[in-house]
Length: 522
Image (cartoon, rainbow, N blue to C red):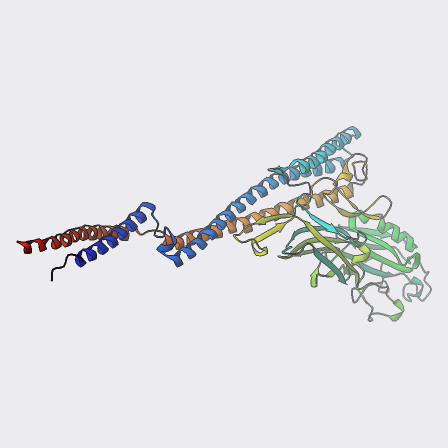
């Protein structure tokens, strides 16, 4: 059959040529862009997945940049803290030197005080000026806001870290379930009823029947004390208290002002690290009775009950006891009156007031209302990928807070600023308290540096490495979906070129075939 109105072979050749040209254009586009997916029509499902991967990749890259920025902030902060640490060490040396009054003149000690004043001012200046891109680092701008603290219950509260999540504030509840205690060793001084001390019950009450040598030991040191025959209870108490700075042990009447009730030897500090030991070295007798409370609880021995009994046991040594609290429902054992809780949701240091920390059933609460330094470390904005830490002010008026006995005989929280000229703990004041404040200040700075260093090493550095591993894997996954395989595409390009050329030749032949019908016309 020879028809010229419909050249079917030509149509078929045109269609195949069009397909070949489209394939050729596709291969050329992929080779030119390096991508297998250049528009949604290339692979709709693949485009959706790859776009999600690209979005996640951008977020992870930003997480790495955030972590590196946070590392820079931490390094800058630690640089300022290092200078504060050096100044504190120099102040410590000056205080120790000034205590050597037998070898230094008043003028030299005054010169030391001037240097201490300058160093303390420098610490405050560093606190006020340390910054990173306008962000103040050591003046308390990165600390937490606290509300509702009763200073008669919680003397000092420092929050190192908290997770707010979607909460505007975090409540902290402190309930005392185990009282902090000093070490208490009781001495029965009812000499009149000691039958063997004077050949019968004829001893004199409140009068040591013979010369006695005792060893008194406490957390600070040990002394040997000779007590003359006839020494009264008050004489013994005065002799012990005159050496409290050496031993860390005080003495008082068991029953308030009634010195005939016996003597209690008590450690100055609270907690299991405190102890009292009293041993008779010579001149003593078996009837000398030293006792401790059997349940480690407060109270007064009932000597009339004999020994031992349910309330007390004979002993020549007693240890203190740490406070035990419920902190937001979790049982926490403190260190003396100090309570430290370190968790993912709450990291807090508390110093309890003496009365509150020794009262079982006592309850206190406060709120953390915001603040701190929030670091976004992951690709998603949620609490699991954020870390919030606090950096307290290191100004002299906030550093080294310690619960100490002031000049009036009362306990109060004193800070580094009290070491300046005119302060209660200057070189003309209480050097023992000054030393304790300095030790606390050095510990605070060292602990803060260690905490920031641990954060940088264990959180930031590991987070960066983890995110970088994620970048590698997600990039590889996205490449498999989106990137062009040049080996396969060049092969397909060659095939498309051949098909395009052959389709063109076939189309030419198909068009020529229709013209052959003219030969029928002669």
